[in-house]
Length: 260
Ligand code: DGL
Image (cartoon, rainbow, N blue to C red; front, top):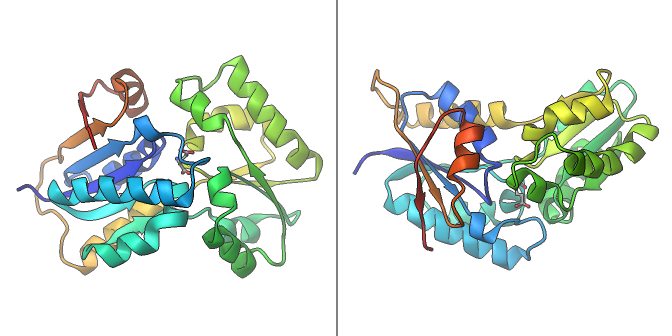
């Protein structure tokens, strides 16, 4: 069985992380699972999301994953500890970059955009008290935004209206740094930039996660020695998302149907 790295998300959001992984670790074979049939995770219970994480991770391990990247903040918030206990391979998760945001902010007012599931999790609240106690953190759950992105609407009027409604109160309170706490949101950075203006810095963790994955594989001597580019395989549990996945990935890809 070919060694690979498994990456998953509720849908297409994790592709924003996969792109950084592919860039930093181009020789590795990657397997991506979009759990489109069960998206969005952000409004599901912790038990429901955990159950999906276990099913997908079992599939990835069966496929030869030597590391798993939970390319979803919501899933990381509720299931990462359990996944780390269950599998004897590195399991890397997402975390909203609060610490760098607080260090970066000049006004001391930092906005966080994330799903309802993430912002209500214990993990997020502990992160907040560890790293953002001295800042004014304005936490904005964004119901509906993931669905717009899954619909492929990255610049349209409806997505703009949702984002404007979420961003306006933050901007009015002097936010100068915005944390993207959901892997779908990097796909609307241009729109966020238009609404928020150039003076606001937008922080996302995709690149940092790819570097951390590389570090962990290196530590274990598991980096691929191949000189050729590794294959990237795509799977989806939901209705055909080949068009959107291809669009976001930047080239046509085949997407397998996964019934789990
Ligand atoms: N992309 C996800 C995250 O980072 C999940 C969004 C959702 O399905 O609600 O939180």
